[in-house]
Length: 137
Ligand code: 5GP
Ligand code: ZN
Image (cartoon, rainbow, N blue to C red; front, top):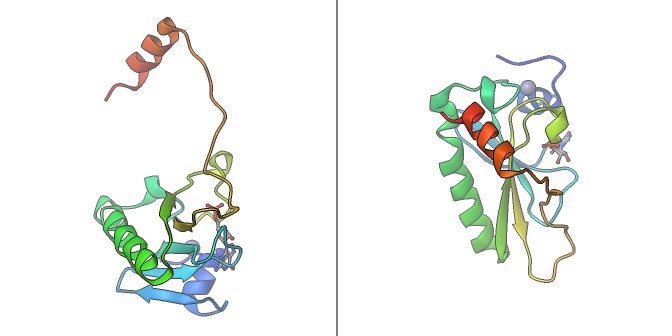
């Protein structure tokens, strides 16, 4: 299941070139074309799913072990000092390519990449309690 308008599907079809780090039956790991740091990789499922919520649980469950494998390999081969895993869902959350992907971003002591960060919101105790009532699973 591919989407003709999706840039990652085009990469997976071989219509657009990419630098492939790893692949198995269900996933491809490629280098990000506009990397935050040296070795920034993207984990892509071979099937098109817009984001995490659209993915079957069995496939989603394989992403973190693969991210761990890639992270350990980047640490071993590039000697990075830390790794960020970043996974954006939806335009408002910063997702620009609407084919699920997880960023694996090596971080280096003294490197100039900015932290993964956000500004903070404040809520009263009552507001926190009301939110908890709404979201408790
Ligand atoms: P998002 O903001 O959706 O989480 O991240 C999309 C990522 O895809 C960005 O880091 C961007 O650099 C990367 N990207 C976009 N187009 C291409 C492409 O054609 N090839 C590769 N390798 N990466 C891409
Ligand atoms: Zn796609």
